[in-house]
Length: 528
Image (cartoon, rainbow, N blue to C red):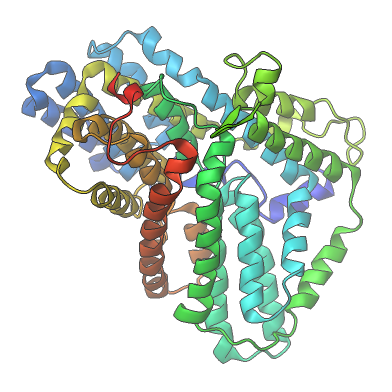
């Protein structure tokens, strides 16, 4: 291993244990047999209760309960749990194995795979670290500005690479700034609140940035995949359309969250903090001049983002913006997954100057790709297809008919609160995979656009801020020992409520103009 690779490893720059960390790690405390037994017990209970008075519905409900219990308790590694549908759905006669297996190779999985490889190349080259330090350096060394700089850097990076990887990158830089400030005689009365605000700001900004793009966090890709699987006649929600809805909310979330942390929750002073800017400058100088590997990898990254954003044709009233897929005559054949894989392949072709005789991305680096998370996506696909094939999603959705007379905003708010609460204690991707098919079936039952339930649920899955186990970034910063659990819960309550308000407002104000979303009616494609 070369010296640069050793440095990256020491800094925690690995993608493997980082990306989707809450979704792929198993119980590290040893096998607990009650957790293992809980899944089959719930499966048997569902068969006995026989919901819907239908054997297929009862069997599928049992499979879902089995998977949910093993996901939540991590009785076995979560990716392993994701393989259960491949065994149980055919065994129970719900669908043949060939129909189940195809779910583990859908294009969205390759979109995520290509994105992981591009993110990995950024880390191998060191380009992501230079970007983060450049942003932080521009905001100054006053406490409020330091928090803003780290939040802004975390927010921008997490739009494109793993939230967990971003948190792991920013954490040692933040700790270095705090240590240097103490060494230079910073007031300890102010250092405690600054430490908490800075570390929480990094964790929270990682989640906020991930919400802004389809590739920013697993629940977003889960929504795109499940939505088009369940509603094949619905209009496409492209990369750019998602950004047009989620990015304004994400920006507002970042700004209001920074204000809450630095002026309301912890009330940081506006005095100069000695050592902050000097540390950032020193770290930037230690990087040396920009290297060719960094520039070429960054160019591939930027090209990928542009191709994602300009691929689909956009309609704004009378304005028609032709996407490159339509212009080349490949619309319907080529999607964002093709772009991701093609650009990842480019990285395997371009030569590296830092490592003579090698390419920008070598296959040996791909052991850090979170392959287990890709299995989790496949398991979610298979679970959703089983919901549809068995009739479980239709039956569960019919239970929402009790909300038929409620105002649409009340329903959307309840969905946001439900998802925010669930993901405080469970994996956000696992929760999203379980809930979205049910909401998709509930929408026609209560006469509301499915997107009006599914999009808020997806965004709310990234809005759990109270508990250390809610998201990997929260667990990472809590692990420093500098954040009391009571402080995290107190701040998290306010951020949870702010997230619900912003998500509901986004769907109400932006969903209609951008997506044609209606809250008081059912589109024709949803009726079909």
